[in-house]
Length: 490
Image (cartoon, rainbow, N blue to C red):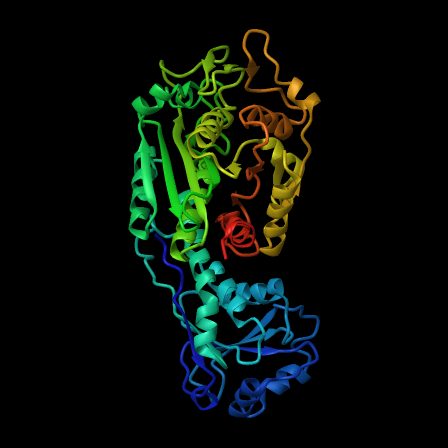
């Protein structure tokens, strides 16, 4: 796994600033005021910092923006990053300042002079998240991230406060690695092996093979992988950190490691991006790692269906009828609407086996979600206002875009089949909603449920607020916060 930069907190020491190597970050308020550390830097630079400020070098800069000065006189540091940030900056402003620093630091060591900041740890988290770089398959580019040192007034308190953020960063990095990995590397078998390794953190891991799922009647999930040489698998990760016997929260993820579209084959343009069609499973796996690392006081079970949708003489055909674990028959109109077939059996199995207090599923399910919301927001659809509102709140707090779309009988009726109980595609109109109504069919009465369509946010072609181009890790921090605020026991 790509390792996040190590973060350590030390007590503020003005005398140590002159000899600090690597990059040095200081903070200036919008009106040009310096704290004690900034004043020491200015003195060491013989007033060079104030000349930058008074000369208009920071004009029109917003909170979180920075200006870099190379090889400053009077300092050992190779660069000074001057960041505009109020002392009481918000979480979002603090993280965005860290993102700017993470972008600037590369693989260099960074010292953040954060003694006067209210949220120095959030600045460090932003720098860690933006410092991600996927170089697994690049020869000659195996660099280690430079250490991030944060000077604060109380290092022990800051370290304790940063521990959950460190765990979240590890979960995000794992998710990004999984989503970025090519399909010839991250096969269903390799994905399952990665999940098995989480047992070292205290998670209980169970892997169901094709024969196990066949006995359970998972004809919908199994139909997706019939055309592939890679065996379909169902991986379960259980974290028991709450009160013994309490019902868990169930997190369910679509894990299509590559999606050709099957017989309803996709066009070649952009087909290489279909390695990311397992992002829902990647997010669930990253969340479970985070919960285990921080010893979350909650019971949570993560379930992911690992399949590959390929074309062969064994592949499911349009017009075929398959039978789900629930017993409903499904007419396969479009083999490229495969993720909902995987989730149908996963959702039913999760409810039947674990009797959860709520279910949240994540999937790169529909292109319609991208048409509706672009790459700024994932789509949320739900049968339960309380749970959905909590997810929306968590996403807003963590700066991960999420927007709720409606459900309704009229949309469900669009999924009626002439020859089976339901069909797997209702056509182009309201595609995200009709897909969600298909999933809704496999949610038991009175079971709180939220579906998150992350097709537009899981992997993008331009950098996001906290990540470079590629996999974003969207959802790990949102769901971790949700667990902390809604499900953890006192």
